[in-house]
Image 1 (cartoon, rainbow, N blue to C red):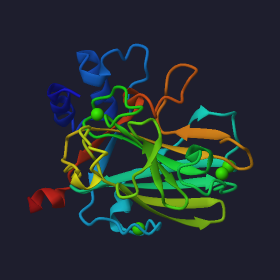
Image 2 (cartoon, rainbow, N blue to C red):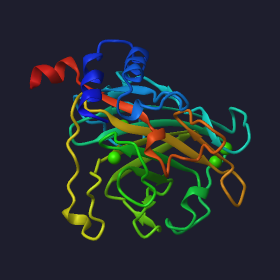
Image 3 (cartoon, helix red, strand yellow):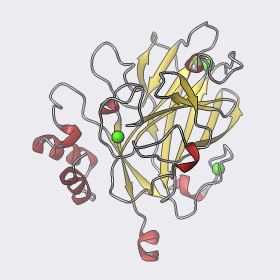
Length: 270
Ligand SMILES: [Ca+2]
Ligand SMILES: [Ca+2]
Ligand SMILES: [Ca+2]
Ligand SMILES: [Ca+2]
């Protein structure tokens, strides 16, 4: 996203989200250019957490009560399903150090059949967190322009490395989940890393600082497998044009926009 479009987003901070999207579309700025054919990138206004949530799979932290639910209802892969097979919704809050993502997933059967975290990780049930820290959009399949963190039931985190092979990023995303009947509550903590990430020297990379009104490319998805060799469905948070909707792991331009906004209490503290 250009500086101009970030400023426009900040300026319309008190407006309705639809107005922000329309205004950016009219101006033809940044990732919103070319929006004639692609769906508008939905904007999620994430409130700042005064206190970071405890990542324990329980949504009892005060910050979650202030965050808005959004549906995880876009079918990217697989046939139509019934709500008992899959349903999902999510919330996001932030601190300068981290994004926190809460997902409430209804899934009739939790599956983790691949013992190795780097073996067909997308064919086990998993949460997939897409982030494009500088909201640039663009191709990110085998580079770090953006990230597609697959968060497994066993806590491992995988994205593609530059060698086109899966790579563990367990230090970037922490997760816990709790289960009550068919409903699994995932609570995750996500550090953001720049596109200059050096995979040959992981310890030298430092997470980015998250700031209010600096938009982040963001989408969430869930791979649902219940009884098949390959995943049965893939549900996402944003609409994707065309017949091939499995584009999130390749093209950051299909992500939505996460706009971190400050809280009055946080503003007073500054
Ligand atoms: Ca918690
Ligand atoms: Ca299912
Ligand atoms: Ca980027
Ligand atoms: Ca499942």
